[in-house]
Image (cartoon, rainbow, N blue to C red; front, top):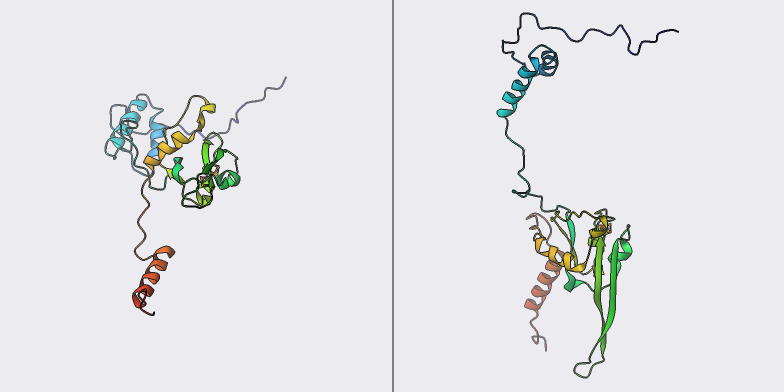
Length: 219
Ligand code: SF4
Ligand code: SF4
């Protein structure tokens, strides 16, 4: 039977000793070649110790990037997509968010309530929100629901500590979503060079118009 070698026998010898160096002598590692030299030193007798000490010395002088989480909370950017918060008071149960969600992970239940007529008007009906839940096991944090909500009822909160041991418990109901509203950061200030919002421009125009033509002046 022919013997087939598992490795080619003509590989170059990569492990060589460093001439004139012994284990007792410290070895300087120039920046660009440090990896190659460290690889060789690590294979010398006592080289592992020298290699470890060199790594310790090198990292001792660097600034630490370790975050002491959870004792120290991370400083997240203001637009972090942590979790979706619901401002329940603004929700009119229009169902737009649930219809546009690509994952179908928003569950809404509601009923109609008739308000008694006031001042001789007709009785009015309104939708009352019974259930608003988001399954964060399905949600892909695309933000479409927040974008399409016409009544500013959904917001991004940077809250991220809502992990659960059971995936079924990642469906969070409106009470929890409402609690997350307290962690929603205030809107960022407008860039001073940006155009003013349309509403502000329209209000300023209306104020200027009424200052030119005060009510009752032309009659
Ligand atoms: S972020 Fe996207 S996937 Fe998640 S609930 Fe909203 S629309 Fe659905
Ligand atoms: S789109 Fe906004 S207002 Fe309409 S159901 Fe969703 S959260 Fe409520």
